[in-house]
Image 1 (cartoon, rainbow, N blue to C red):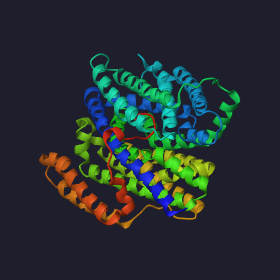
Image 2 (spheres, helix red, strand yellow; image 1 turned 45 degrees about the vertical axis):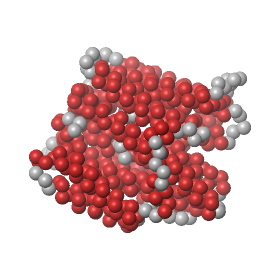
Image 3 (cartoon, rainbow, N blue to C red; image 1 turned 90 degrees about the horizontal axis):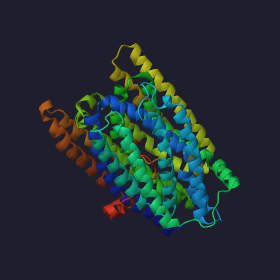
Image 4 (cartoon, rainbow, N blue to C red; image 1 turned 45 degrees about the horizontal axis):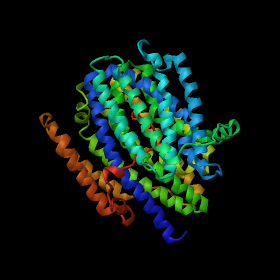
Length: 507
């Protein structure tokens, strides 16, 4: 591989990273109103009930994509058929799987509401599965053509703002079903914003008809990818299901709000998926393993540097951050801290998986399955041990994020080691200045944390800004090289912003 090819790959990753910074900011701005409305107008119990139902519906929608979020690019790059025919094959597959999943949950709504009575519109909620599944496949097809602007429109503007606006409106008419109806409205709006640009880009598939044999081959080929997607998703959401079986909805609601705040850094990783996947597959096609190792190291460092900044700045004034959602959610502050650092620890493994799903998909799947089983067992063990020791429900519930944090750290070590062996080169993104920057930020933030309770406003406003400034100064001065600084060489406008092709505002 020539130096020009190397610089072009890093430039492509940097360009994707630049546009995703703007997309991340847009998404952050859109999520805050929903958290405030849900926390202040619906309360912890209704939020918790909604959170459990959504986690089941979104898991079903993820399964209904049959791994096409990542597998569709590979199918399109290796076919001689018209691309719009392949895309509509994928949409047909997702439609069939979505309808089957909807029927199953319609028949057994207890899966969505394990700890509360079923009534009203509860049974009809799974009918929305079709919308996020088709939206995911559509955005994956657009990402293959490097048209990820549709993602920012659907995921960062239309979907979250529809959710916030309708959650506010429905709170005056149907308090019990307001969040569910708002979610349905947001999914339908996001689907519309995904299908329209898809048709514009690929056109109407004239002469297309579903081919059962080809659909079956596509399903079989994408099974490992679907499993990897489901297991990665499960590692981030199974804790909510576990808490739903052991605690009342109000506890789940508090935890869910902490999870929503902490999940914001995760979007920084998934924001790189639309550009990292094509770059990795192109390097694989050339047989350039060294380039893949360099790409993984580079992207993982960018993500960890950003996630660590968010984790430190939000952790120090943690109670103040949760109090902005609502006074009853302050008890979730400790869970938020564990979840924030879980995202930091997960980054290396998640980026490594971007290459492993193509190079060692079955071994990657086996590791993910083992780690998910370990997480479930450790979560139950910690929660039950804390319960036996006589701690309150808030401390007991913290066992779930602690288990997640530890397992994600172990997963990152294993997957980075696996990928390093396959590539013949280390993929570790760690640099000592990351530690120095974390210490600098912690010292500044710790000083503001010593202020008396009456100065909590200063901790959240001035303290966060000062902590972030100290961290970024050290990172920029001592950790960033020329390739890192290229990430910020030309910041995009909001119109150029891109977002992950992940589906689902709630995840």
